[in-house]
Image (cartoon, rainbow, N blue to C red; front, side, top):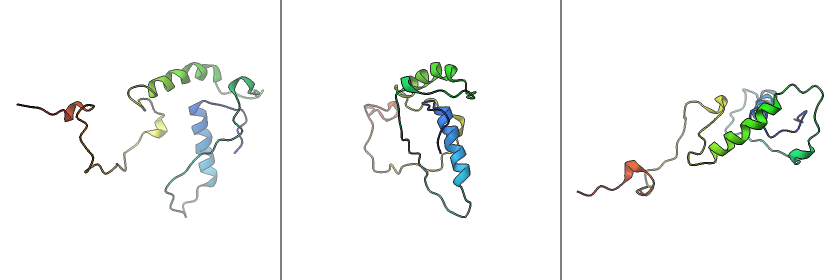
Amino acid sequence: MKLPVETNITNELVGYALRGLDLIYSPEYAYKKAGVILYDIVPETVVQGNLFDEFPREKYKRLMPVVDSLNSGFDRGALKLACQVGPKKWGMKQGLRSGRFTTEVGEVIRVK
C-alpha cells in the first residue's frame, strides 16, 4: 500500500500496517508471521506534504525521539504501542543456557 505522506512516525506506520492486514487477511489461512517491507525511503528534509493530511505530525516529531531514546537505552522496549502488548504466547527454551551471574541480580552466586 502506498502511504499518502512519507512518515517515520511509528504510530502512523503501525496504523497503515494494520489497515493493510485487514485488506489481505483471510480466516481460511493459518498465518504464522507477517512482515512489512519499506521502500522508496527518502530523507526527512525532502518529504512532500499533503494538503489534506490531518495527522498531528508536529506533536509526534517531538515525541518520537524521546520514545526512541528510551527504547534504545538500558531497558530495551520499555515503551510499546497498545497493539504491541498482549499475552505472551511463546518463550524461548532456556533450559540449557548458561548463568547470567554478572548481569542478573537474582542469579548472582552467593558464597557462605
